[in-house]
Amino acid sequence: MKILFLILLVILGAGAFVGELMIQDSGYVLIAYNQTTIETSLWVLLVALLITFIVLHWVINVITHTKLPTTKLKAWKDHRNHLISRRKTLKGLTSLSEGNWAQAQKQLAQAAERSDLPLVNYLAAARAAHEQNNEQATDELLQKARNSTPEAEVTVAISQAEIQLSRGQLEPCLATLLRLRTLAPKNTYVMKLLKDIYLRLNDWQALSKLIPILRKHQALKEDELSQLSRDCYGQLLEESINKLPVETSNDDRLKALGKAWNDLPSDLSRDGDLVQRYTELLVSLGAESRAEQSLKDLLKRNWDDKLVNLYGRLSGENAKKQLDTARGWLKSHDDSPSLQLTLGRLSMRNQHWGQAVKYFEQSLALDPSSETLAELARLLRHLGDNDRAQVLLQQNLNLVASGLPELPMPEQEKA
Image 1 (spheres, rainbow, N blue to C red):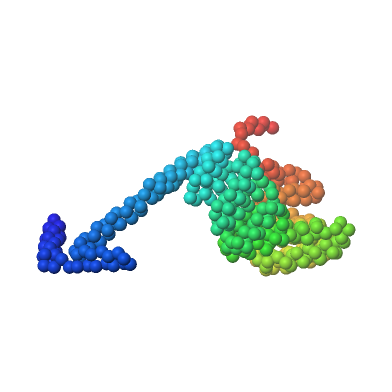
Image 2 (cartoon, helix red, strand yellow):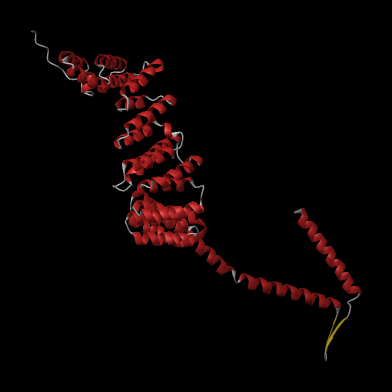
């Protein structure tokens, strides 16, 4: 209020000062142009200029504000489209989550046409079309998503690869994923999809090259990677001989298998499952002596009960030396039931029947197993000791038929 009062005082003071000047001297102004002259006082000219300025200012404001209704109309229209798009997007996503694929596709596609972010709508609509097995609509919606947001090529391509994989279009999916690897080389989800497609295509060679990349970028948990590596290299071992022509000799097959084995990463060459598979393949090619030597060398570096059991199943070149080798392991592994079982089998190969029975009994005492029980019972029967074999089986009935339910039994009749 005080400021307004001060402004009024200033205006009144200025008016009084200007009025005094107008009384003292009105001034004279002459404007001549060609044959036309205009004569007036200075103050009249100033007032005319002021009025002209005010009129021009008003005219300009009128012209400027005549555009305002159009601007407001456009803003209202944009706001309305935004609300409609949001409402249809919400309905479309709800329909999508409820499995109403046709309705979801229609609502999401319509919302995309009014949305300022159509990418999400087109991708969701493409998913709905895919669920209806409408390949043409799916591809068209993916293309619209790509055209609406060119910078989101990786996002669109990932959705495309997922849909292709779901359709079983393995080769096109692989092409899409390989292109994605160049666009987003560090994208771990792309790596996982590529892993899945290699598994579906049984492309173990390509998968073996991808595994180190998966490990480097920690795309999978370590236990998953370990299992994947075992499966992959196990298949490569089998492929090394299975893909050879039928007429290939065993010697050439052994060379191919040996090369595949040597190509394994060093940590996997000590894996029990892979060693077992490699040994089985050697045996299938008639190279038991080579398998026996390979197992013996590996067990010197890395003890594994599973491989020890396998060692007892092999028939080496010299049964006595093989038995002596296994006996040497008793110094540090006398509590191994697998070693005792293997010693029993190797004793049988050397026809040391009594020692074999002893080793089988020790193995059974350390760890009762149906495998050891079967070996011991079989040996006792062939030795003519049927009664002892029968008693042994009766005492260890739970090993022969495990998992039987608890049921009431009749009382034994007195003799």
